[in-house]
Image 1 (tube, rainbow, N blue to C red):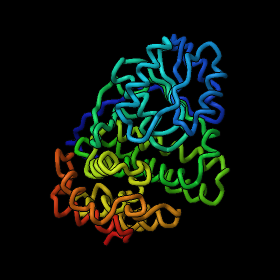
Image 2: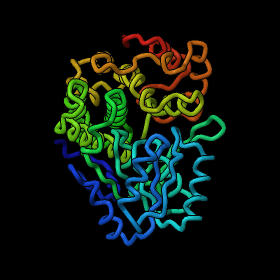
Image 3: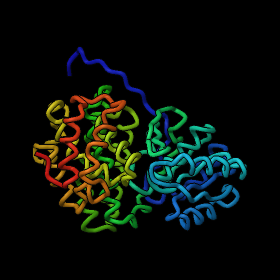
Image 4: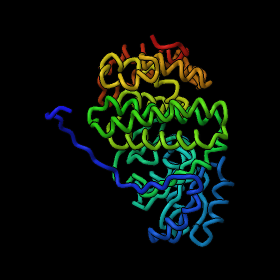
Length: 354
């Protein structure tokens, strides 16, 4: 290693509890943190699971708020903050994936409450100090130590029933976090190791999950990979890929994980021309060409390949490109309207990146 190596590395101070059956330790974690009234958060789809979790907590549960929604709409957050106050809650427990975790973060951003997460997907956002909120069709992001959940429980048993399609898109979403981490402006050797290990874990686990959804070892490996990928995203800055996903999600109401899954081959192909050395270790996992390899991998898993199938029409390309170049994130390659439109066009059509 070069003696001239220099970098800064901030470690996010979260407690991670990992392993089969670890969800049963939630009550102990609450007591250890001195919490007495937890507001359990879920999406409407997971309301029954949230009520069962609250019942298991007994007197430690203040109630259940089951309105978490994709892209964290501010109006939903305001209702949740009001419920938190009226129930006398002293912390939140987010059960689920990105939508629920985002709501917990949004509450904490407003009242600085302590957050616990029981992760059931491969979103990775549970270990990032980043909040993305949507208001009036615009998604904005903010980064703060107040937003980082304090305790995250990873129980692979809870992912055994995660539908295959959601497992695939959620896993590709996590891979996207790590790919961006490899060429981030503030990357460092530790995040590079974590990113590559996270990609490697998901690359090996996802095909097994598609073939055998109940494979406990593969489920655990995928959850481990998603933790690593999310940790990378929470440590370094985001770039073009996340800017595009935030733009499409907030302004076109595109589904979060699916949009990441479709876009990552195309954003990787674009940035590979400007960060070839940084992306080379990941490219080697996918046949040497990261963009095309990711597209082939996604197709082999049955993942969505076209943004038009998610609701973005070719007629939306000009507006999407206009929005994407406003307040751009740092990126190794130039963020120019024409180049971004050219990147998006094959992603809309579902074409393999050149």
